[in-house]
Image 1: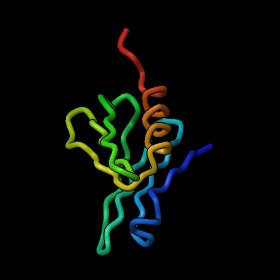
Image 2: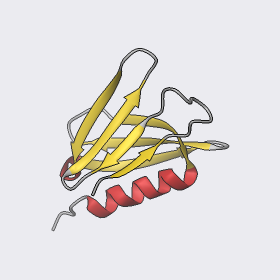
Image 3: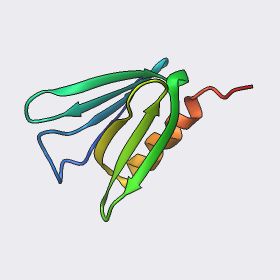
Image 4: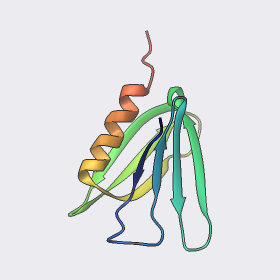
Length: 95
């Protein structure tokens, strides 16, 4: 079962960023007025997750191995924390 989170429609109701979890990895859809990007990252390829909290909304930075970071914006603080927690729970640890 896929879990889906969408950025807040309050700040930008048309171009909402999306985070979609599945069994093997996570897809980040960054939507813009013209175009946008879809990035799929396997859980094992994620080396870090950072959250920048603003007054009302948060920006999430995903740091994949050997790729540029992925930045998704305008998530509520609660959704940002939950996204980070879900990613970190699914990233395999080195043993």
